[in-house]
Length: 208
Image (cartoon, rainbow, N blue to C red):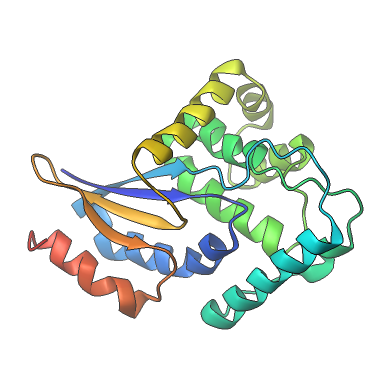
């Protein structure tokens, strides 16, 4: 069985830009490979509010992503006061969703992306995360318990460390795994479907 390893962060703008491509990849691959999502930890455990310089830098990234991908952005986020850009809680939400239903990781990632980038919702807030979990069909109380658990915190940290050990230096990153063969880097960084499709096809056909 082939495995498709997707390293991403729900508060990574290039991952949001890549979301439609990733959805197309998942549809195209179908049952030929198992999708496994790993949270990369773009800015975990940040503890200081965004400065005006921070906001300008992030806004510039958003502009580039919007131009390259066509994805929508709500720039009202930059009007928040004392916003701390800590990606760990949102990453942990994916881990918690997976605890409840292994198939929920991808829908949860997609919902977090849209909530943060297109709807100006604060995905660092646990209450918001519970609401988003219920929107994709997870029991809110179960999710809240899972998200706050030490197991989820340790598992999330473990995934950050796994990404580092795997030499993942940017998001989104997509790796193809075939039993007994060397892992194949399908993309590291944003690409349109046309850019990544040949690598996907070769991997599925056993040519790479």
